[in-house]
Amino acid sequence: MEAAEKTPKVLKKPKPYVWITRFQNYAVEYTLYVFMDDINALPETDAELHKRVLENCKTHKIDISTPTLIKTV
Image 1: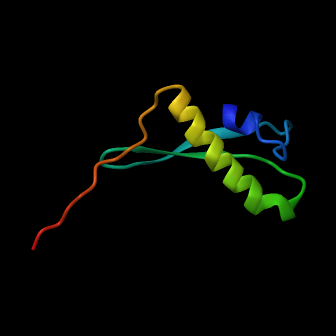
Image 2: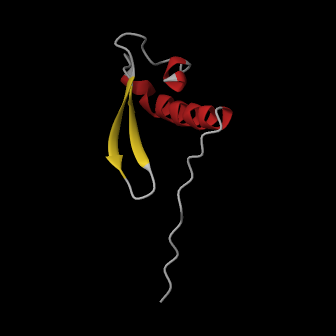
């Protein structure tokens, strides 16, 4: 939510929200929903949101890494 609040093109109303969308083997998948009034700004806003989410995770010491499966034959 902090990431959405700090992203310029994201509208304050309706408010952004987060839903748990899936449980993985080693992770929980969340989806951040935001509203915009300029669809042309979607690619740059999406990139900015991803960047800010990663920054917030680092700031709050939230580990978002997942195990890597190495398949041997």
